[in-house]
Amino acid sequence: MPVSTIGDMRQYFMTSRANYSLKTDMQTLVEELTTGEKSDLTAHLGTNQTKLNSIDRQLEMLGTYAQSSTGLSQLLSTMQIALDGVDGQRSATSDALLTVNSGSSLSQIENVSNIALSGFETTVSALNTRYGDRSLFGGNDVDTNPLASSDVMMEDIRLAVSGLTTEADISSALDTWFDDPAGGFHTLGYQGDETGTMTRPVGANQTIDVDARADDPSIRDTMKAMALGALAGDTSLSLDLDTRRSMQKQAGDDLLTVASPLVDLQARLGYAEGQVEEASVRISAQQSSYGIARNDLVSADPFETATRLQSVQLQLETQYTLTARLSRLSLMEYLR
Image (cartoon, rainbow, N blue to C red; front, side):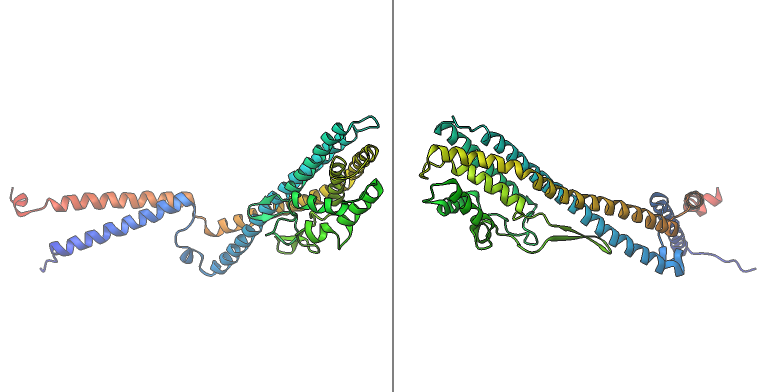
């Protein structure tokens, strides 16, 4: 009767291959148990692979929109903080200007003038706030600061009113400088985009327009009133004391008047923030829906995986036991 035998080398290779196969199976099952997903999705899904690819594309697109919405929300919040700062300067400067009365001395007027000038400078700084490397209040021009420096603008404003001696003439010159398309503000002060609005996508068919720019009439009127209050204390101008007092009183009143338009500007930003929040909620819901659908396709049943893992572990332990016993077999052991 013929006897089938396996040589030592062949036995070694068979044992090694069996060990490798069991270890690979165990590693795969451990990974599936840990991640909750099948490791070989192609074999698992078959014809459903196309459906998974479609879901993954949707999730990738939604992730892009979610990132855009988050960035836009932070940008709008930064803009609101800047406008809050502008309104705070408006209020504080108005309060200071309205303390001036018929009995105010030149020294008092100069002190209030310094407050108005500081308000002008701080307002310019707030409107030149940047979000990362992007300017905020220059429309589609996100590279350039929307406003020239306060020193440059005030120097040009002083030149525009040089030689004028009445409040009416100075106010008229300021109106021209700030409001005329050929005036100093539009040709020198404002450096951003004068026609466009900043537009950002927050969904497949939705964009948000941000129309708050540093050349908004409410911003110009705020800066104009602050400039008027600052000029009242400028001793280089040949103005009598009553004119200086009247200028600061008028500047304080103007800053009170511009409060409502500034609130309207902030409200427009608030509306955009609300749209972004709604879009974020919608995107989150869609991500959850697609995530559940994807999980249904690729998930590995934990009970089944754990059962298979236990079975493979038992097989591997048995393989190790057999290998250990076979390694102790020899002629001397048999003859004992």
